[in-house]
Length: 277
Ligand SMILES: *[C@@H]1O[C@H](CO)[C@@H](O)[C@H](O)[C@H]1NC(C)=O
Ligand SMILES: *[C@@H]1O[C@H](CO)[C@@H](O)[C@H](O)[C@H]1NC(C)=O
Image (cartoon, rainbow, N blue to C red; front, side, top):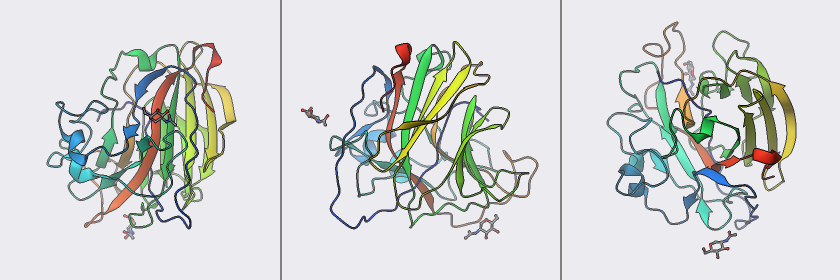
């Protein structure tokens, strides 16, 4: 399994009550990797290197699926860093979401096209931004554990081997599964996260808000081990239940139809403490 990245999990509750509101927040710092998707982008844009200038078209997804089969473009309010020029996308899981021979997992994870294991994303001070929303038509099954992992993990559902009491929470964990921040999943609103990774000092700081609110620091800076490099991955990795070999075996229900909605994905350079709030 490729253990890299910070990833996230999300879904949408479409259909707000009123017409979509647009509150654009400005990106104030230099963008290192831009995962924001221009409004009107065709689903097939994501399928090949010839067209996809945003994400890696080959990773991390079901072997027999194209991204145009995996991604949905839900309507509804834009996330705060997307505004009118960029659009949300939903990463979905089905029974075909088996990457390589990882039969235990169901996966759909986006990687920034220009990211590399020893690239700029893992040096200096960088802040990963993403907003997530739940899709009432493609709910996650929080009896399972969902994550993306690397130096820092973004997780939801019941962590295997741990109590189910916080299964409805998003949890930001360090590589040793120590909690850095935890917040209840919201069924309807955008939940906005920014995670500053200070590779020079081995520190993490977490910012959070809901809806169109500005981000606020909610945790840290906390000392943690950020060594090792890797690539970011934003999407869903669903673990099975009932297995000690979660990569290769375990229980996943059939006719899977789950998703998470993401918006405002980008990595910015936080040298000189610059963080877009
Ligand atoms: C959206 O894009 C247009 C055309 O590039 C630009 O003029 C405008 O400033 C952008 N809007 C925002 C909110 O960034
Ligand atoms: C959720 O996952 C559990 C454990 O795999 C399973 O028993 C249950 O049927 C699933 N629920 C739904 C609604 O799929």
